Length: 286
Image: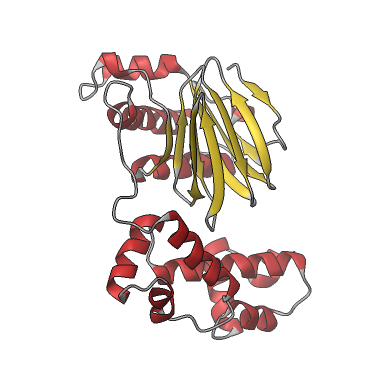
């Protein structure tokens, strides 16, 4: 599969290429602040954000520009042949999926629920699609497992991904899934920055809602609309991410890390680290 890429800052953390998957390449990237110009003449490209917290992202596809916070689950679609430039000011983590147009054409011809004249995709900057996000996670999980499930499993996921793209993001009938009813970009960055800066404190729903001058119920609804998770779930995710980072980069004890990150006890932190990583804090640190 041909791929033209300029200014790629680092190789992928993981890639399906050594496993020889057909019609699709799946890669995981984690990059420091920077910029990248990307153009693929022969494949459609799909990027799914894995960012644990929102980061400001500037994107340009041909002459169209878009600036907004990028959060976990945000999807960007670049059809084959279009030039794509993006710039980010914080660490950026994402899945990049490259798909052969021939696969979309074949699936469009075979799938009864998709018209064969919808095999072309339209560019999208920041959309949400739960099924596509889940399929991306499953494909990445198969890479992490070393391809244990086999080619049939990968083919099934690939075909399901193609159907979802054709059904909701074709050039004939583009999907406009967006953030209606959620927080504004400014509000989202304001509240997530506050959470990140105050992880060690006892943050309540009233603290966050008052920050944006909203009722607690209104804030909860709009936050979940923007982030895909409730405020307490996001807070827990951020505390776990910070704890993981401190385990890897410092010599602080588990008890000290628990206090810094706002956990009620070191045993509570230990339980959650095991739940999210499958490892004890000591094993994760090693």
